[in-house]
Length: 419
Ligand SMILES: [Zn+2]
Image: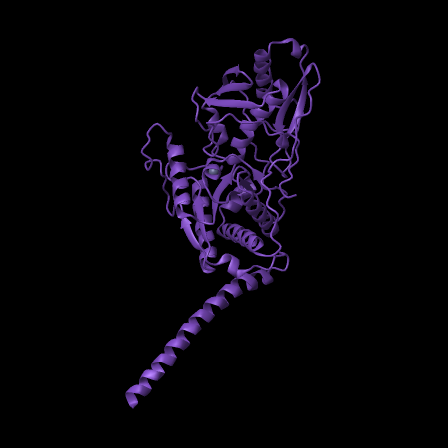
């Protein structure tokens, strides 16, 4: 009799315990998603849907590492250290709400020794191993954390980049960009498309978050601060949670794979060349043209015109101009030729040093060349070699195996990413 009684009590206890644990988990999840946001009156957060978030699997990639420091600030602060710390903080946010996180790295290391093909550069081997980790994980999305830099210190602000192949990537980038602007103060940057190798080669929706410019002294100080890194991780987490909620709810956003507005370059007036330099404003990565008088330009041979245009571009913006050069002054072009309708520019590998590992400086240096050649010579593709080699890279984010097509939307200074 007493044995039976004891058994029954045991069973009741067990049931009660399981429900209790389950209840606590639900309570924690709801509390985390709703409670935290209600504390922040200034941030308008969409009602997050726990069922859309927990149970998901995501890959977090801490950019650079090991032999590759990434961009380096004036104080000696390295990109690889910031990206790892923000990635770990971000992992904690996701783990708390039942998201399974795969990290591409959790220590200061690189994967240049992982891929057996010695013909590939260390940087490419490292990135291809990260691609492998991500693709084998079969995760729902990938977040790659990087830090930006630009030769001039004027630019600041976090910015998200996406690849054009999956419309979800753009939605995710726009959601994180919105969250960063809402949570970290004024930032008029918009999510932008970029040809980063990791984004191109992975199979899931993927976004690179450049969490700020290490080349800007004020932002470098912020990026060194643990509290600010925590806020960055929080903003990236909420942006991602809002994206997942939007995908799941009835108000499902319309997915469109169209990433660029249909734009073309303006026509260049006879006797002038149009040179693209970066704008000093902090709203976008965009170019503005400087029109320079070049008498009899049209009478030159096309290849000679190309050489002249590059020479003018490398002189930098004219005196008194507010525009910013994307390439340092100097003889960076080793050779220029035309192969049919494609321009082939061979540039000096030493240029990579001015890039300083930063995504923005890499993107802007490349497209300053490509867009300027395209508008003046009416070209559709520019192939870039580095020290005569194809498949090269300047900053380690964009690989130059394919010729680059001009991007008029950079030069128009407008970006419809959020429309
Ligand atoms: Zn980077």
